[in-house]
Amino acid sequence: MAEKTAVARIVKMFIYLLLIILAAMSIFPFFIMLVNATRSTPQIQQQAVSLIPSSFLLNNMRLLSDRGAFDALLGFRNSIIIAGGTTVLSLYFSSLTAYALTAYKWRLRQGFFTFIMAVMMIPGLVGAIGYARLVWQFELTNNFLPLILPAVAAPTIVFFMRQYLIATLSIDIVNSGRVDGANEFRIFNQIVLPMMKPAVATQAIFIFVASWNTLFLPRLLLINTDMFTMPLMVGLLNADIYRTEFGAIYLALSLSILPLFVLYFALSRYIIAGVQLGGVKE
Amino acid sequence: MVKRHKGVSYAKWGYIFSIPFAVAFLIFTLYPLAYTALLGFTDFDNIAAFMANEFRILDNPFENFQHLLFENQLFRLSMFNTFVIWILNFIPQMTLALALAAWFTRRRNKFRGQATFKMLFYMPNIITAASLAILFSALFMHPIGPINSLLQTLGFDWVNFTDRPWASRLIIVFIQFWMWYGYTMLIMIAGVLGLNPEMYESSEIDGANGVKQFFFITLPNLKSIILFMLVTSIVGGLGMFDIPLLFNDGGPVNTTTTMAVFIARQIQGNVWRYNIASAASMIMFAMVAILSVGVFHMLRDKDAVRLRKEEKALRRSIKAEGGAK
Image 1 (cartoon, chains in turn red, orange):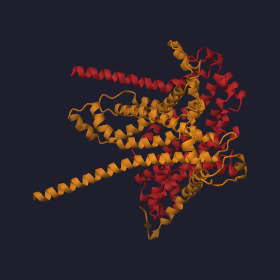
Image 2 (image 1 turned 180 degrees about the vertical axis):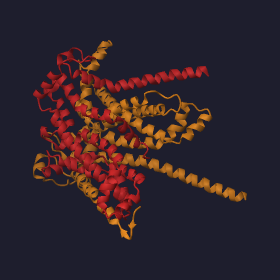
Image 3 (image 1 turned 90 degrees about the vertical axis):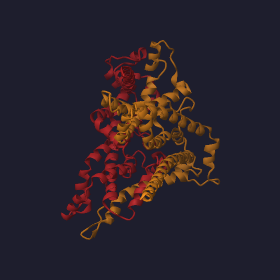
Image 4 (image 1 turned 30 degrees about the horizontal axis):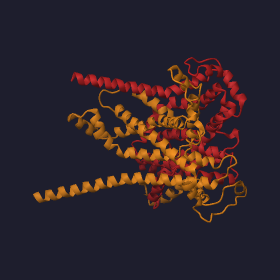
């Protein structure tokens, strides 16, 4: 028995070691990035890994704004508009569709739901070329709307909202609204939607982050650099003008990642709980 | 659920509230998808077609598809790259995620700091892939990047990672793995926690240890979630774009060009091959469809088979009972 516990203890120590290595792996790249954002290019060239920040942050900032098109504030603004618009539309209309699928009995209901389940599997990428061509044809490139409006039809979010409504929607509350003379639209806006707050909050984070991070479609539809989203701005860093300014590159990367860090560290508990919801939907 | 209230039918509201989704889906998903499919059969491959919107369906409508599948070396290489990068990332990712899920759901002798570990492991997943790709290309820069600098401190020669096909591929594999194992782990933990705890309790009474529990209880019962993850991973993996594009621009010599990067390259700069890009998109769509239908088929069949078996057993036991009386 004593031998067994000794073995178990050694095994546990090895697992702890692995966990610590993995944790370090999650931190190390970002740590290097943040430290090097404060160091000058010659310092980085001499010694690429340093634990001590230097004093060139402002200098790097100046280099970054002088060099070229990369503009963190502009990218931030554009991404906020697109991701914010996408999130609002996606949440409202997915909840509405989910409500239609749970609260009412209509003949095509089951068929419509099966259809939504089926199209959930279509990767967004496959229609992108035709979509880009159509957007060009209607002269809507360099416009945020073609990137925001598709959010009205988000099958995955409808699926999640429906799951939530099935578990929580009480017919009595809906009926009491009807007795009070509210129409169906008002009942949804003023009674049902506030009830869905927990689901809306969780999904909001994921929709926002997913939209913030996309590159493929914005890359096809946004041409002028002043319309670029954050990932497109980051893509500019591969251009030759930045190639030799390592400090500025690390700073630009830090600026692009910082908003997500803030979001994550403020909400990580909810985010992790939200991801795990995905594992029990079976 | 709610159909009538005082004789009023509310069914029409079901239709009304579904209209925005249906309309947006038709305009922004279905129509572009059909249009992409159409372009794949045309001769839309030059600026004249682009400017005047003049193109026609080819005499041999499948020419673009045949060209891609049988002649275009780059597309075939991009298919190979995509699958290699996906498989090399998926297998270790799934293995580690399962091991972590088993450790983090241990019923006795728990690990400390689990919440912190989970938070750190999942973190890379929400960070912009574009930023990560460029961050790693800076980290692996030669000869003065941080990784090479560490190699030199340890007494090795520096390596020109971005000039070597397999080094570049493996770094992309690593980034994908690093970004996604935390997510897979969280899903697996939720799956394990959703299993019936009595199975573990009774196996403990029978003297099963953690390893045995993992192989005989956890793994078989997570099969459906593992297959589900396989499908979502295939869909995501075949569309891999940001990291191979920005880490090394699909290079060296196209050895990290994935299908999505190939597609994007057909319509950028002064290249206007909308037909080839569309046909390639459709080939990708077909692959995703075949693979996911295959996996779902496996899932459904097993459940149906089990159900049928249980029904048979039940019938037999009823018969036996009847016979005993």
